[in-house]
Length: 140
Image (cartoon, rainbow, N blue to C red; front, side, top):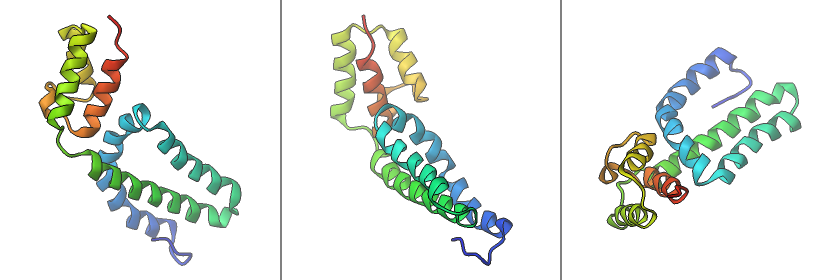
């Protein structure tokens, strides 16, 4: 992690593997946070803004890095909780919702396509939450 003896280049070299490892997770979690937990992402964004307001220029990078590290840690925990396969009850909920709302196959496939899947059985819990939210908002 950061210390004042490190140059920005040394710091970047140290952080790059963590950021690259998390890149897929960041992209996967982005839609989930936006649709399901918008307050969580606002909390993380506010940490960056606080770092910019509170710290001197010399401390800015350190504070921003600490906020980003906190974000990656929280995101990794969320990923672990949400990247598990969909439960049978969630598959049933998707299909009951589809039937009750009279959602056409075209709309259903479009919603699945937004999370990059072609079958509800292939969803993980994060994607299932997004699909359920989106299907809930579909009107006849």
